[in-house]
Structures are given as C-alpha cells and as structure tokens.
Image 1 (tube, rainbow, N blue to C red):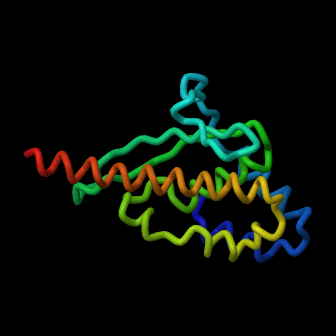
Image 2 (cartoon, one colour):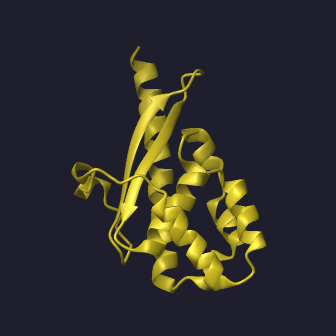
Length: 148
C-alpha cells in the first residue's frame, strides 16, 4: 500500500479507536515473516515489543541500491506501524530513503500524540534502523564501484 493512501484513509477516520483498528488491519496484511528471519540480526533493539526487519538489497536500473523489507512484530499495533514504515520506505532507492522525512509523515498521521512513549521510541528505532541500512547499502555500493 502507498503511504499517500494511508494518509488519506487516516484523514477520513476521525475517531482514534477507528484509526487504531485501521493500523492493526494494515499489520494483518503483512505477509508472514519466515521463522528463519526472526533472528538476532533482524531484531530491532529499542522496541518494547519484539520487532524484526529483514531487508533485501537489489540494484535498480540506474545501479542504485534499492531496499525491500519484510518484517513482523509480536504486537498487533506494532505490526501495523511496521506496515506503515514499509509503505514509506520499502522498495525505494537507498538515497531516497535517506532523504525521506519519516517524522513529518508520521506527524501528518498524528501517531506520536496517540502512541505510548515506549511505542514512539520503538518507531524511532525502526526508522533509524532503516536509514542505517540505506546508508550501509550506499557505502557498500560506493566501495564495490571503487573496487572495479
């Protein structure tokens, strides 16, 4: 799902109970994460719930690294937050991920005012992890280009 669709759906839902249900529904639409990917390397630290983000990096037609994510959480609301982050970042080139202001998008959704501080910290940890992955993919791409 596209983040713009999520933002417009959020705008139509005025009640926060409905918005929470919608976030949980987004999480239910995530494909299941294979058990093998529920490992320490994919685990996001800084989250109260268990959260795993597994990435694959491919090159787009311009040779830029593109990151695609799979993920899961043991908490329904957090699974939904993972789905929202995937709508923002997954499938995008690394340089675009680094330029994306996730906080501004999440602010537009009004999530921060309605999440517990622990959930907000966990969400920030997930964003930092995705941005760090994008930075690493760009550096790897630059190193392999320099080696050739």
